[in-house]
Amino acid sequence: MRAIECRKYGSYENLVLTEVEKPNPKENEVLIKIKATSVTTSDVLIRKLDEPLVPRFILQLIFGFGKPRNPILGMVTAGVVEGKGKNVTAFKIGDEVFAYGSVSPTKRHFGSYAEYICLPEDWNIAHKPVNTSFEEAASLPYGGLLASHLLNKTRIQKGDKILIYGASGSIGTMAIQLAKHAGAHVTSVCSSKNFELVRSLGSDGVLDYTEENAETKLETYKYVIDAVGNSKNSVLKENSKKALIPNGKYISIDQGTPLTPKSAFMNLKLLAEKGEIKPVIDRVYPLEKMVEAHQYVERGHKKGNVIISVSEN
Image (cartoon, rainbow, N blue to C red; front, side, top):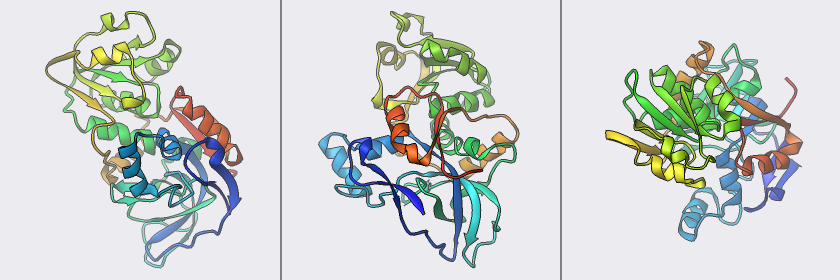
């Protein structure tokens, strides 16, 4: 099968299109023919691995020294069940599914930068929302699960004022929609070129972090949600950490290890099928253009998700 391998950490040029052996499902696994996957910010961080010495050492303990232990990156899958182990009961051949290769910090599986992948049936895998394409389904898990992780640290009540920093990315666009679903009044921080996008997702207010003296427009919020973490900073962001009502809370994606339980995954499927959340796709690349996709994501200005079309739908 065709796959993209990361031969060593560093430049996107280390991503190589190659031929590898097609996997065989274990007794509790399904074999998925991948139709679409996504290139996430986390994928880029793992591929580059240019963190300071101590964090880099810890990451290499997890992912491998010198090069990824599993050279095929990617954790997001949307496709069709083509095979299954003898103990699989939840899926049948031909089912259209979507999946995320992590169900807990200790249960994690890469490999979606390829034409096929095997995953345990009881992990984060479900029938694809009936009203989404494969590309749209591949846009749900990463941003949706991480946004769910952030919002699970809140106790939003109807009318609570929330500020979301990094609102136009894959996590931010989902955070807007999930916060609105919970009844929040949402102010989105992004560049002005993305105002129309975040408003279309339900944002009540907008702030341009590039605008001079933008911090003077901050109000006070019950929650400030930082969807980009330490990868980006601005005067507005530093001031937003203190723009809280009494007992308000600043929550960053960099705080702790994100949890991705199956309950959150299934909730995304339900909300998508009800039309209460919608995936945002910036660009779609074919598998052989993976290097270009990584280049684009690495620039740090994508809107929503960058999708890889692996095989024809």
